[in-house]
Image (tube, rainbow, N blue to C red):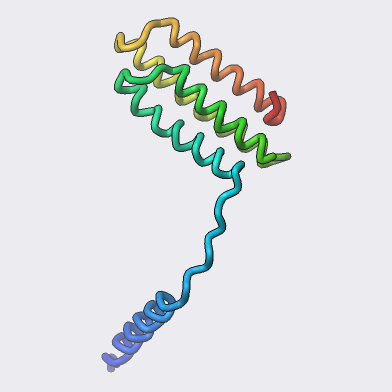
Length: 136
């Protein structure tokens, strides 16, 4: 025979646990350090440049510049070892995606062919930095 009271009791318990967790004060969130704020700001500006590139309101160089600033801000935290390599890999991933997007825009006639060569430069430079374990 199915006990219909058990699911109700479980639901009441879950609701009470949720209410109790909401009643607890939230832990204080520390203000970011200037180095952390710099990383966050660069990441924000980089993300904002991507749709502007597709809309013709930003250049590939602007996207590249903010990706490099983001990586530089991470380097200055300072990142070391695997974290620095991961940051360099993320920059390379961004530049690989930029090169692909620029190639599409060049083929569509929205950007000059010279921008494709520049985007290749950005990707190759990022690959060199990764080979140097994140260092310039």
